[in-house]
Structure formats: structure tokens, C-alpha cells
Length: 245
Image (cartoon, rainbow, N blue to C red; front, side, top):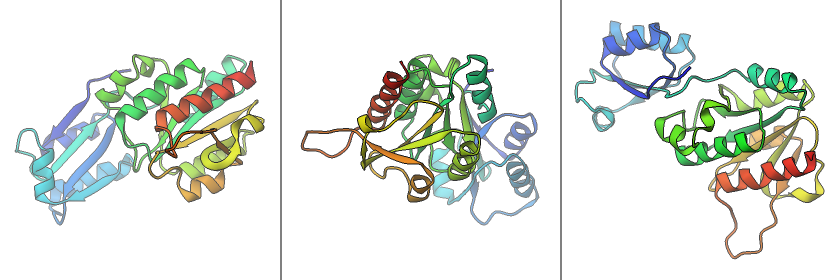
């Protein structure tokens, strides 16, 4: 189910958005404001496991479109998020080994959209992103995905490392993109696999990397030392496709 990306401002509007079941990607609250309506909003946010960002009035004024935010602004996702279980079920229904793409530190919506597009074309069963330090499913992501967001599910999880550990217990192996890893052509990437991609600046976080089974590097012969995250995801995803064929 799809609904339009929405910036929601004002206490009543934000509270009603939570209570109506809208998927709120980000909530910004005036730091130090603890009156009754704000407490009601933060309770709803915690109930829905929404990340709360406490910011200055200047920051809220920058984010505000109406300049009548009343100390609170919420951003609703353009698309609904799926569950990881939905992806595993889709793989089972197709009689295919699960193929998941997990993203760590991907905050650029253009990169996220491009990776979702690649995931769809490479036959991945879904994309998993963390709640913190990640782009959400904005209209920019939807546009950059070139329609793939209508077909490839995206799940948002609280803890990426914990999700990987839980999926490993279900027989999925995880390979993390890292320029110091084993050359991808030397790894066996067949079978149930999760591909973990980080940003070109920071890469995959240390804890997530340590949770993975392998690290894979892409051979590079140029003078610079990294690929754009969406390009790296494409190269590694299609090495998985090649080995599965």
C-alpha cells in the first residue's frame, strides 16, 4: 500500500498521524519541551518504536514548511515498510534460496533508491535498513528506484547486527563489502545469502562487520580507493547472480 510522502507539523496533526497508523520515519521535537501534548506525542512515538530527535528551535524552523510547527515535526514515509519475514516467505514461495541486501550508514536517498532498483533487477527478495543513520522511503527514493519500490520490499529494523544474528540462525550466510576483504571471485556466494553494504565514506560499522561471515572486496585498478555505494552494491549483487546461474 502506498501513500504520499508527508511533512506533518503541529501537535494535534502529529499525534493524529501516529494514532491513525501512518508510518513515521522521523520525529523532531523541541529540546526541553515536556508539556502534556509533547509527552503524549513522545509516548506514541516510543510505542511505534520511532526514533525521536530532540533539536533546537532553529533546527525546527529550518525543517518547517508552515512556520507553525508548535515544537514538533514528523516525516511520514512515502511507502509502507515490509517485515523481514515477508522476504523469507517470498523466497520460499519462489522455491529460491533467500537473497537479501542489508544497508548500513546509507543516508543518501539517491543511493538507497538506486540500490532498491538493483535489488529488484538482481532478484533479491528484499532490502533491510536500520532505523538510525539511514535514508527512509521518501519520494526521492521512490523516484530513483524507477518503480522498483512497488515490487521490492524494504524492511526497517532497530538493530542491524541483531537482525543478522537472527537470520544466521535460519541458515543465511552474510557477506560484507570491505576493500580489505577477500576478492569477491574467491568467495562462494551461492545459497542463502545476505549482502551488507556500507557508505563509501564510512563503510560498514565495526559491529555489523564483525557479525558477518565473510568480507568481500571488489578488484579496483584506479587511483581512487572506493566506489559509490550503489555501484558497489550492483557489482557484488551481480557476482551473486553469476554464481547462482
